[in-house]
Amino acid sequence: DSGVTQTPKHLITATGQRVTLRCSPRSGDLSVYWYQQSLDQGLQFLIQYYNGEERAKGNILERFSAQQFPDLHSELNLSSLELGDSALYFCASSSWDLGEQYFGPGTRLTVT
Amino acid sequence: DQQVKQNSPSLSVQEGRISILNCDYTNSMFDYFLWYKKYPAEGPTFLISISSIKDKNEDGRFTVFLNKSAKHLSLHIVPSQPGDSAVYFCAASARETSGSRLTFGEGTQLTVNP
Image 1 (spheres, rainbow over the protein chains, first blue to last red):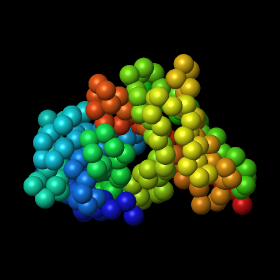
Image 2: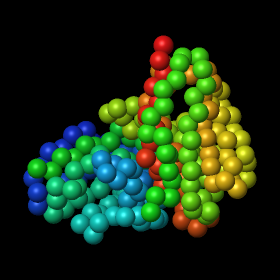
Image 3: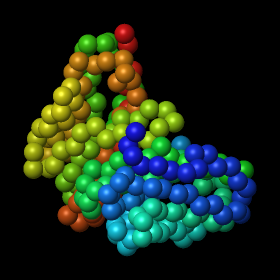
């Protein structure tokens, strides 16, 4: 158990819909990262927050957004969903900006 | 552009023997490397890391070797145990220039046979 929690575990929704994925980092960790793992792309970095501020952005679509709240939990919002958005979404956290990242169990999103 | 590559999709070894997983990278700005293990339906689990100023780091049964001139790293597991059977991901970051975002390889499925 990494100490990182993610909800929900599974999510099935239709194209065009909007969903919110939630992540609680390990106690004391200030950095939160979001990654997407799809069948043909492997694990891809989406975005990082550090103590509430956006720190780095990867290949995140404009339809996706994220935020980190004062209690350090983070949410990833995915809108106007397409079939290709079906993937595993992982959250990771680290205690400092450049520390080892510890991953949550992931949210499996299926868009039908 | 695959900056981190794990060319072996799978590896099978006997219990008690050495497992060697390989990883190559192309981005010379990478300065920190990590190995993760992943079981089905779970998130990646951090195993071991190495900074580019070192060429070896050891933690129990796990040793990571880094050859900067060849842009190659490897993970040695000795002795291998059936519980080590999982997908292993190599990851790298360019902390000086791009912060801590990780770039992952495609993974290698390790099977340790009893």
